[in-house]
Amino acid sequence: MYYQLTSKTYCYYLSQIMKWDSFVDVIQKISAGTSIFLNLVLTFLIIKKSPKQLGSYKYLMIYISWFEILYSIIDVVISPIMFSDSSLVVVMIHKTAFLNRKSYWISLILVAIYCACFGTSMGMFGIHFIYRYLVSNGSNYLKTFDDYRIIFWMLFPVASGSIWGSICYFMLAPSDAMNQRLSKKVMLTFGWEIEDVAYLGPYFYQIQPDGSYIIDISSVLGVGIAWLFLFSSLIAIFYCGIRCYLNLTQVMNIKTNDKNVSKNFKNLQAQLFNALVTQTAIPVILMHIPLSIVILFSYIDKDLGTLSGISSITIALFPALDPLPSMFIIQNYRKTIFGLFKITKVISINKK
Image 1 (cartoon, rainbow, N blue to C red):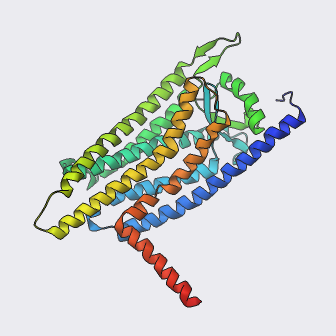
Image 2: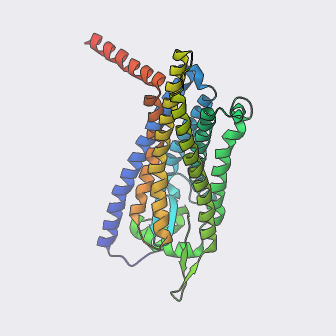
Image 3: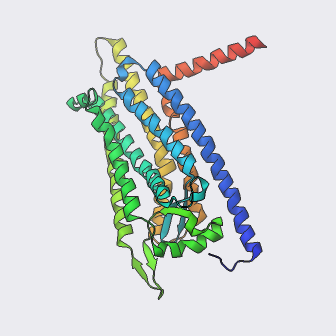
């Protein structure tokens, strides 16, 4: 497929995207390496340095750390790019970057898995807030985290992500209308043939041959169902977060006979809550807000073009930054890390 482009124009677009691709690729690789290292360190701290009062919550913390490692690996392997053109917005990958051109269905599945990770992330943080609320409230349901039933809690984010990925794969799949809309823009912007691109996403208002528009019901329903899951998770987070804060405030004002135990318990609960709030704010700011903006602009038929690709960078940063709140807010972990820095500093001084 060829287009009437001057060599000057083609070279300009190609040079610009080569710079952008190189920058995104560097960010994804650095973020993936940082994420794997920090999450492995956090896993070690959780296993070896967690206070006894942490209980089964440490399994949830390990769970999210390993999810973020997986997320980083997927992100760096498939190198997804988000792109929008008016009412069309897609997450796409260049198939030849890692697979044979004939493996189109595998490429689509990988894009769907990447989308599924988005849904899994919010479901996962929702479960964490529910757990913290049950602890602060002293609920009997807390027992469900102390035996085999914790597996069902852990499966909830997986189910949420699976539904999200399935919606993208079946309801937001490529079509002839999307190919026609994207083909020229993809060539102009990235220098890629549309046949070499695997993508998923909504096309809200599809242009007809006579210039009229029709609303794509599949896109509207698909995005609507996906965001219903997202908003349900956000409502659970805000509700449990507010109630947890109120309960925690009451606990801080309670006086008991054993002041040492009370103080330790209060400090730990405050640390865990602060870490969780910060840890949840990171994906909301880096993942959900950028994607929401892109979807909103597409819904009102406004073109963001390559600016929508900024979300590819912010999403790549998420798993690299997310372990930091737990590592530096929870006192036991922070002391261990600073202790290692001191030992390293002493060794380096002695060598000199």
